[in-house]
Length: 581
Image (cartoon, rainbow, N blue to C red; front, side):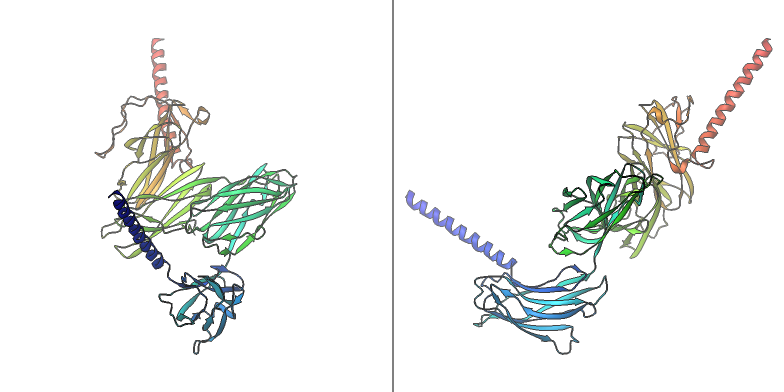
């Protein structure tokens, strides 16, 4: 009985395994139907070959015969030749000609695969050569359509998949971006790429005059907000380095403009010495996409001259850009900085009511224009929003709001964000037009939104935004203000700066026992009862560092009242003393 049960179990297991095997075989067969495809480079600047190949022919490709048509754009490419390719020491036999009435835009090809090509289930069997006649930016679809496909014994091949491909004319600029003149002991050179499509990996070499400059480090760059990992870099000889990068986790590679790597140099030459920073491909290595197609590159060098009188290179700020979607629909948002579209590897979408990071960029300190564009499904209109921001310091945070479009009038309001750059957790008090609104406890390096719906105004105009905080390290109270013209729904970002005693510019003790003014809004947070610490005004905001029509004038007005009070007290003391005499 025991042996019989064992046999039954074995039979059941064998049957189960057989069913699973058949199921997987059927699934694999369905996933891999016989396929005939066109293979061309995605991008090229020279003549190229279109290869016609077969895959997934389970019964083998020997003794196959058939016919296909191939059409193309004669304004972009020009047919040069068609020939059979070698498959296991035997060439495929072909005949071809232009299709009648096609204006030489389509050819037909008949082929026979030799019967002694072994048991291969795949193979490249036709090569079609093309010249380029179009311009940079042109593209041509190579559209393949199949006719009959069968073995010489008459057995037809069912469910054949015919796959097209597209060739684009163009190359991508890779530029060494370095200062023309340097007066410092060190400098950086960015290796920039412009409008690349589906970049996955690559390498390059960079040569220089080692008696003038020398490489000290190679750091990753960013394209479309995606970091470009540096696999390795090394000296090939004392005046040339090789750099290798790879994005194995990027399924479709990265697209857009950005920096592949940043190379740091030490200056070792004399005043007036120059060095060419010569960039080129390394041996036969290329930039490639996820399909391992070679991406054509236009290499652009730079020259650096040592000049002790040259101004220092401009400082760059790591600028983080966020988009907040105030609409009730999910939106696809496009960002432009200083008029340049910032390409993402995929469509940037923001859900309704959400805030999402677009990317971070290295921007030179100064005024920059930020523009977002989106399409609203409710109104079926395209909208844009433009803001200018003064970028300074090590990091900057920009939050741009979309606008909800309905039949109602647009709100005039300001959303206020405060980022704490100090190393302490701080209570930060917000005033708008000298009216206290609320305070928030903000951790180090956190950004706080003060009112979710924003502060609304009756009409457009200039408004003053001020923040106050007490720094426990210096035991001083600071304030910072800015003026903004508010005409629609806008966002204001202010920064709490790190401070030490060395940072103090102007200090004045202003004791007060009066309460901080309460907000006119019923939802405001309570203000502290008293502020008795000295107030130190730091004009670290470029907007508020000017004359009487900014925060500095306001602070000077406070000191003016203080001096008047002190003077009045002194007069009273003197008068009393005279009476006694």
